[in-house]
Image 1 (cartoon, rainbow, N blue to C red):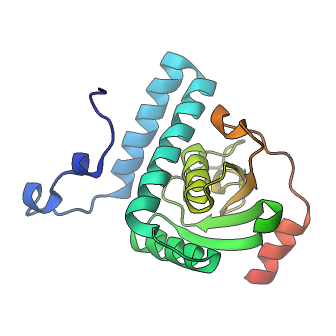
Image 2: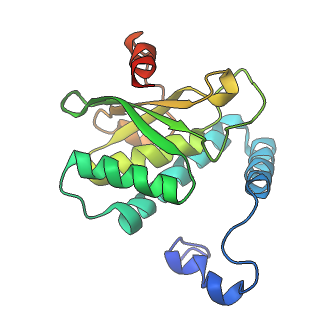
Image 3: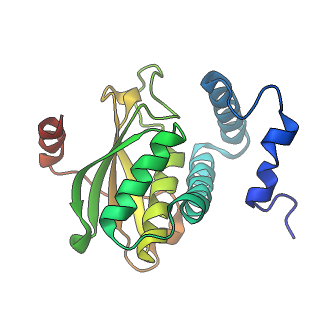
Length: 196
């Protein structure tokens, strides 16, 4: 048995343990934990392994989040609505669907005010690998099929939103962790502009 196999019991009784401070904390300190952990993982295991670990942790979190907050749902509309509501209530981000072609195995989602990256300095790369795994797991939990999610725009690359291309995985492809999903058609940016 693993020492820290995840269950909601590991979160503990926050009301009992923090009667004065409660459940909320400063986002800056959440990011301190996230980025120092990432720094150590990259130093010890390399960037590719750190990316895979963050993606897989995001998948586990997305599966657990779905089971606790989203399930049960009876339609795609209810799934999206509940996911939007809980991501907002939990202050993770503001989810918007720019394109939904479930029958073709393709979605384009944006997350504004993203917990992990909104407000970070501009970089030359996307940073929301944990979110990719989280989103893939939400889709997998809802559809019971394998999905991949790849961030294609990020606050850190100047987009000022996180945009994810979510695609149905080919058999066995979802097991690889971090994936490349290809390029995005130019209609995505136009869809976002029309929705604003």
